[in-house]
Length: 599
Ligand SMILES: *[C@@H]1O[C@H](CO)[C@@H](O)[C@H](O)[C@H]1NC(C)=O
Image 1: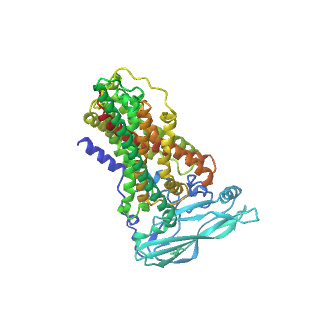
Image 2: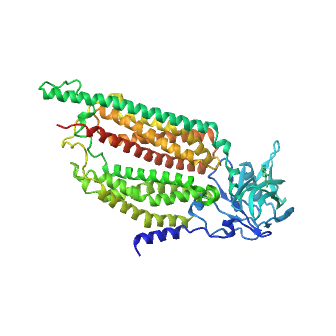
Image 3: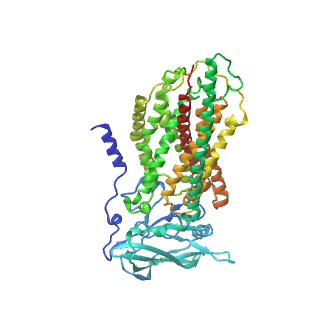
């Protein structure tokens, strides 16, 4: 068996195809038993602080509250999103009304129960349940105004709409407020009514999508705005570059003609980017790290593009949200497969500098490969294991079980790393050696003191502004769906914004590098990476603003999760945009120096 087939089999083993039970066909016989699954519970203001439903001291049904009955077909993504489905213990039969409350369990409140349930009510705990994979939500209880007393809901009512043998929609309402007092008896009950409906099964998730929010005029307007900005910016960049470059070339040509006639060069005009042709293709400082960053950046570009395209093509399963955690699973698959891209890009980039004056470049490619393989996973692992520690300490459902960690580690070891090595081999094989348009001088040139507009300290923050400006409205929508319980589904918008972001980043990085080269500074590689990537820093600032003014999150756990994830996301975005910027800048540098005749 060839290694690649073995990897494929391994991949299949780790991502088992969903089983074809009635749960995945969603068709039921009349009067067949259905299960209402309870999922997670937590304070409304903190979306990541969710606990298992039965962690509250309310009464548990006799049967099945401990096991996750939906064990087959639980994907890694579902576990990572913190879903933990348990049986609610209610008896529900397809199409059979049970209007008289059937008591599922009774409990006498002890002091401890009153305290804990009371805290949950005060912190506005709400819970989520699943009925035939459709989510329903409810509040734990209420405090009555004026009275310093908590009440808990004990009756739930499910109103189910069905079409033939399929369930189309579920509404849940809560009732039966009972005071939380020591010694008081609570009996929890559920009533179910069934209604025929003519709505179709395939649109049943549409009611969860907030069209008014996501397809608001402002959203369209922002996309339109960003498009205009792209056109304007590209036009401006093209204009500036064509005009300035043409002038520069004319000047140099004139200089050369004058030279030929044996007259003296004008010393005043003899400055600008052309002067550094002997240094501009020098390898960047810390070449190894730089190559790894570029490789990882390309990998991120492929991952994000892959996940967005996957989400757009979602209807494989009828709807993107039909399967919990699908997007995370897609992310893991894309990450694994795109390791080959990371290896290829970094290996190829590194290869270019073989045989240039920096001799060390030729001997350290294995190390470059190692750094490329480790960079992203290490950063992610450090942040995520910190968060996981906190989650474990709090006992939330967001903690990652050991089995899942092991699976991910196995995928990384047996698929991701070999693919990365393979990519590096290809990159070294196909990368051309030392193929720059200009020769590199053996002695580095002195860099003159720059004017402010040639100083990277100004160029880098300035060039990050426009890319950030083109995406921040979309960021608001993404943040709101992630941190404020909205299903994000407008991936078409996201794709457009991704493309706009790429173009704007490329344009502004080219301008930034042009100013840098004109200041006769030839350390353009790092400047390009930072110029492109600086928008990630602005994204983090925006996340700070969002945290303080748009959310009500409290507590150590939620704060750590928010900033951990936002930090990771900003870092990833920096790398991704930096790579876009660097790619465009290196195309630009090659293009302008191609036409420079070196004497
Ligand atoms: C659920 O609630 C919505 C909105 O209140 C209503 O239009 C729909 O008919 C309800 N469906 C069922 C099955 O009760």
